[in-house]
Length: 491
Image (tube, rainbow, N blue to C red; front, side, top):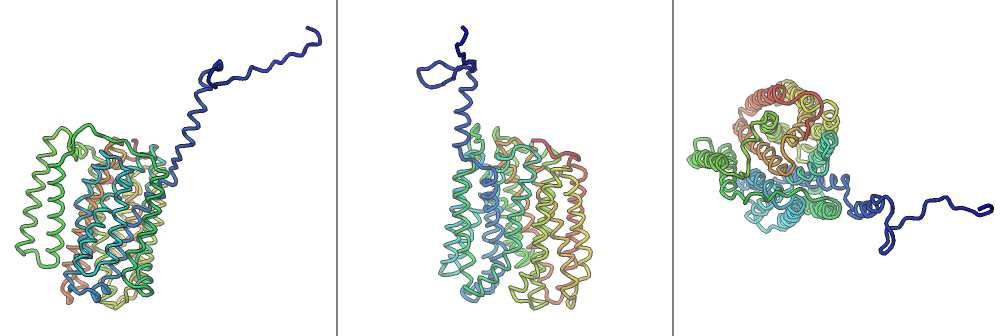
C-alpha cells in the first residue's frame, strides 16, 4: 500500500531448537562443523615441530654420547669393551625393535605410542644421568634405544597422516630431517660445552625439557593416525625379526672388536640366518603379516630400502673412522673434534631442507641420484687423507659427504611412504629405519675393523672410502632405475 514501508530483506534464519529451519539446511549444518574444526586444536605445523623434536633427541643422543666416552670411562671404568656397549646397547635395541614399533603404531595408533615412547626415552635418559655404575648405564641406554625405536617410525607415520598431499609431505619430511640435522650438527659442540662446564651426566639431562615439550605438543596438537586392527598381532613374526636383527647387530659389533673368526661371532651370524629364514616363512604364510613381503614388489619401496642401508653404512662408518682419526692421529680434544665435524653436519641440515623442496618440485629421483653422486665425489677427494694432512684440506670433502646424505634421505623417505597405504605407514617407515640402522651397525663394525691396527690406520681408511664410494654408487644406480621421474610420488 502507498506509504507502507516494506522490508525486502530475507527473513532471519535460525537453527535454534523449536524454531523453523532455514530454507537451506546446509547453512545450519555448516556452523557446527566449523566449530568442531576450530575446537579440535589440531595444527600441522606444531605436529611437525613435535615430530622433529622426537627425531632430534634420537640424533642428539648419538653424537653427544660419543663425545663423552672418555669422561665416562674415567668415572666408571670398564675398559674399551664397556664403552663400546655404552654406545652399542642403544644401537642394537634401536635396530632390533623399529619394525615391531612401527607395526604396533599402526595397530594401536601412532600418536599414543609416540607419546609413550617419548616418555620412556626421557625416563631412560634420567636413569643414564643418575647411573651409579657402568652396568646400570648400559641398561638405561638399552631403554633409550627402545624409546628411540618408537619415536622414529611413529613420527613418520604421523607426518604421513597429517600431510597427505605429496608436495606437502615431501616438504614436511625435509623439515623433519632438518630439525634432526640441527641436533646432529650441534650435538658434538653442545656435548663438549656441557662436559666442560657441568660434567658428563648433563648430556643426558638435556633430554628432559626437549621430551616434555615434545610430549605436550603431540598430546595437544597432533591428530591420531588411522588404526588398523583387521588382523591379530603377528607375534611370531615380530619375535623372529627381533632375534634376527639383534643377532646380526651383535655379531657385527663383536666381530669388529674381537675378530670375525670368534666362535660367538660365527654363532651370531648363524642365529641371524636361521631367525631370518623363520621370519620370511612366517610372513609369507600369514594372512595379516607384520611385514607384507608384497611391499618389496614395488620397485620404489625396494630401491629406497636399499639406498637407506647403503648410504648409512657409508656415512656412519666414515663418521666413526674420522672421529678416531681426529682424536688419535691429529690429537684433537673431544670439543675440537666436534667443531671439526660442524661444517659437515651443518650441511646435512641445509641439504635436508633443500631436498624437501627439490623432491616436491622434481620428484624423488633427481635429488637422490644427485646426492649420492656428491657423496661419492667427496669420498674420492678424501682419498688424499694422510697423517699430516691439514684440516684445511679435509673439511670441504666432508662437507660434500654431509650434503650428499642430506639431499638423499628426505626424498628417499617420502618416496617410500608414498608407496603404501597410510594405515601401514608405521610398518613402512619401520622397514626403512631398520635397514638404515642395520647399515649403520655394519658400517661402524666393518670400518672400525679396518683401522684397528694403528700401523695401518690410514690404509684402512682408504679401503673404507673405496667401500663407501661403491656403496653410494650402487644406491644411485638403484634410485635411477627404480624411482619414478617427474612429480612427487602419489599416495
